[in-house]
Length: 206
Image (cartoon, rainbow, N blue to C red; front, side, top):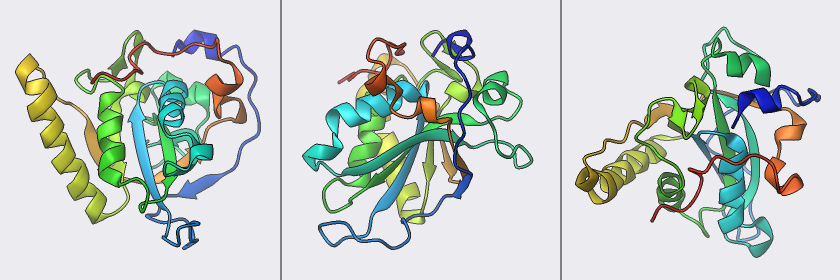
């Protein structure tokens, strides 16, 4: 997203740090399974959240239970980041989307493939006109199983969609660390502001 546009927006109060875990307090879904967490960074988090909810709307019971945009993957000493400091590049945080999902309805590998479908994973610290470490492509895994799935799906997507184009996926695959929710005005921003800025790379590419 265009950083200078959003620096004009007021800061809002927001919840504190959430330590990333593979489940959400052992709560059961309506199907009886335990919810899991997936965390993705793919550029402007407005667009990432918007396209996931467009194709997996919560009210249609397609597996996504809850989403939040926020900051993760930063330096250990860079705690409680806000939007302005993240955009400065000094904290190394990525703008990211945290998804709570029902694995009995939607599998993690499907979400990983969808993540790759909806942005350009071959550009370093960039999506479209948005540049900086906060816009990098990254998968933050929450379990050894998620790591193996993320690596396998990445290899499959590389071979099928990018090797023929002589392009290389540069997505980071990293263990999930501390998570900070972004300011409230960022949450579901494009649902609240349909004419707001959306990076053109956030679309289905296959």
